[in-house]
Length: 288
Ligand SMILES: Nc1ncnc2c1ncn2[C@@H]1O[C@H](COP(=O)(O)OP(=O)(O)OP(=O)(O)O)[C@@H](O)[C@H]1O
Ligand SMILES: [Mg+2]
Image (cartoon, rainbow, N blue to C red):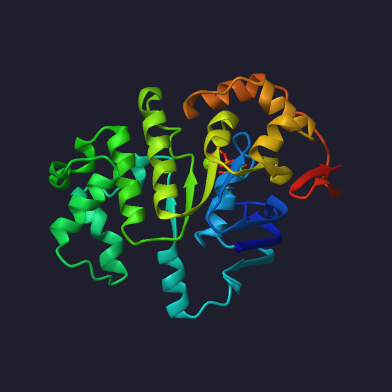
């Protein structure tokens, strides 16, 4: 069953001067209930923009998006509130996504309070949410500045899960973390997905990380989808030269290092995507 259907979506960002610049080009895909759909692509390819559109943080210009069969553009006030609860986002940078003036206890209850969700004993609820993400209850009285990067990201995950969402957009949730804790947080994200039967859009720039967690993978470049396939199929039978290129390039470990490698790397020009070739049932490759 499809949870979200994205059809021919274009996204433009306004410029300070001149005409708006197109960031996403004719994006179409579906997200199936309970799957982890990975999105991989280099910096600037439009991954975060796509995540923001699906969570209604950013508007889009052409095409349509349906969540559970309903257009996300025509939701009533009540439906929109429901959508905002069901669709949550985990951000790349835990530093800027947690309110520095709030204690962990209140951060975790933020959404619960906002949506008016009854949780019974609040202390017990917070304790359970913390335990679920591998933190002891003593963290509840801490401020974000008193947490490590990995702990902050665990709190961000706990906050998102506290409102019992169905669909999570995880935008490079481990990229900003120390390499030593990346695997732990990634495993936590995967474990929670399985336990709670959640649906994920998992955004990353490291194809191996995305492969590890995803059932299917979308490869993006310059705001277009170049390939979609089931993870194992993508690796055993990559159809687009850019996918092959991604597989052969060594991952850049930290976002801060990325711009350095991008400057020195040549960026191939494949031209606009004219159509898609269907290699098998669920395997599409862009034709230029
Ligand atoms: N608010 C904005 N206004 C104008 N342009 C924007 C805005 N946000 C992003 N962009 C541009 O859109 C393009 C895609 O950005 P986006 O953040 O989606 O890329 P990304 O694939 O997530 O990159 P990264 O891997 O670095 O996070 C970039 O060229 C970026 O400069
Ligand atoms: Mg991004």
